[in-house]
Every structure is written in C-alpha cells, then in structure tokens.
Image: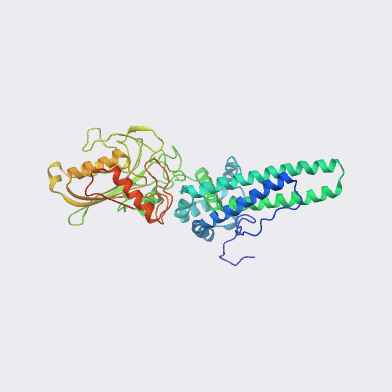
Length: 420
C-alpha cells in the first residue's frame, strides 16, 4: 500500500525502471532466432540510454499528472486509464458509463485544465518520436522471433520430443515475458499524455461548451505564457464560434493545434500600451484580431508554408496583428511616432510576414521591434526552421543558427531584433 499523497502507477506495472542488466537472452533458442533476439536486445540497450535523456520531460509530465491525481477521484481516473490503450471507439463507451459522473468530470476539468492542456496539446518532440519508432521496430523483431519459436515448439510437440518441448517452452515464456516488459517500458514514455488525451476526449463527448466573452481577455504578454493564457481562456469554448482550426464544432481543446498563434504588444515612448492583441492564422471565425483588408496599410505576398503549399499570407496571424497596429496610428503621425513593439509567434515567420515587419519599420522609423519565436515548451521553446524542420538542440550553437536563419529571412531589417 503506497503512502497517502504518493503517486501510484495508473496501470499495473506501468512505472518501469530503466536498467541495463536485465535483458537476458533466453537459453534455448534456434540459432536464427537467437541471433535476431540478441541484436534486438543490443538495440534496446542503446534505446534505454536515449530514453534516459528524456527523463526530465517525463518527470515534468509526472508532476502534472500528480496534481490531477491529488485533486481528483483516483478510482475514477484509474477506470478511465484502464481503457487508455483501447481502440478509439471504446471512448464512447467510457463517456456513456461516466455520464452519471458528469459533475465530477466537469470539476476535474475546471481544476486541472492547465495541466491537462500542457499534457495533451504538446507536440511530440522529434527525438521522442524517433525513439518510439525504433522501440516499435525492436518489439516487432521480438514478436517475430516469438512467433518462430512458437512454431518450433509445436513441431517438437508433434515429434513428442519432450526435452526439447520443455526447453523451448521455457524459452518461449521467457521471450514472451521479456517482450511484455519492454512494451511496458515503451508505454511508460507516453502514459501521461495518453491518459490526459483520453480524459479530454471523454470530457468533449459529455460536457457542454463554455460560454465566454472575448472582451474579457486582456493584457496578453507576448510570450509562451501569453500563449497559454489564450488557450486557457478559450478552453472548452464553442469551436463553431471560435475556430483554432482543430475542431469545427463542440468544445475547443488544443491537442493537435496546427494553426499559428501570434501576440503583438506595442507601447509608446512613455511606456503606455497602445496595442495588445493576439491572432490565429486563418479566415473563418478565428478569434483575436480581425482579417486584414485587401487594401490595408501593409502588402502581403505569396509564400510557402511548412507543407510546401504556396498561397497569399494575408490571413496569417502576424500579418493581421501588424496591420491592426498600423490602423491605430494615423498616417500623418507615423513618421515621428516613437515606441517599442514585441511580436511573439508560435511558428517562425514566413517571408510575407517577415516582409510585413520591414514594412512596419519603414512606416514607423522610430519604432523598435523585437520578434520572438517559440513553440511547444514552457522551459525553453523547441524551435523549428522555416519549413518545419526541428532544431536539434536548444544549445547556444543552435540558437545562433536560428538567429542567422531568421535574420536572413528578414533581409535588410535594421532595428528589429530576433530573439528566443
């Protein structure tokens, strides 16, 4: 029995310690299967070392889930967790069975929406994604060896070779148990986000949308925290009224948010805020700053997105914001207007939006603009290149490379600073 307040595994045996010395080759294996299993186990030892490097991220997820467990009904959460790896159709059965506990689910959602948001919305980093793919490959190798050994076991039974039957039987059970343990290790890397996503899915099926007043969202800081402030405010709002591009109806939840979100804050020479807003890329019912007019103060161009598609970027979040700010200052005052602006964008600026920054600088020669780019992480954002390629490390060298890359995009910009 665990101590009160101490986190328990959500599934039997789910918390698996990473050890290097427990990968033992079963004794009685045919030569071909022995070679394949030995190679697979050697690969798994290397993968464990890579998994160990992800422990800080996993521990952060554990702390978030611990908060949810401390506030909620553990029995109910374990009941939901028990189908966390079942087919998606089963979530409907979970929603139906938990319908009578709708008030509890609503309470847990309201109390923990920040933790659930962070767990379920985070895009899987490339290093974790690659690790899971390789783990799946090793598990497939072990399952193939297991199938081959099972065929050998049946053949020895047909020959009534009892010593071989006993030897192969023990090895088959050992290999099956080993594969099961490694599969649990693999699932330990995704258990928290999987449970959070399932809980959100159940909530979306049985809880009503929240009614909000967009005018109440004010003082948005141009940073990752400001971005989370926006998602906090719009969580479970009506997606048919406030479109972030993920859902067309029902409650908004940001598990796979693909559209860009940007924030712009501008203050005058006395430090007074003259413009503070956010925008979501897209045309239809996007919250925040409105669409830029076709004949506005700034000119957009066609530019390629991360998927290689080329189109006019007038509806990009950054372009909407920069246009909105320009419209707040009369044309006659722009040349002498002094101030400071910070533009934060979840995704890197395309060439059109980088050009819009230049245009604003041309119209406001005494305005200093900082451009910040960050995505996915509250602790030093994971960065992407212009076409979506991941920045491999958050070390000084990669940051310098990104600064050079973005500076090259905004050619000729003299006062704007690109910072992380």
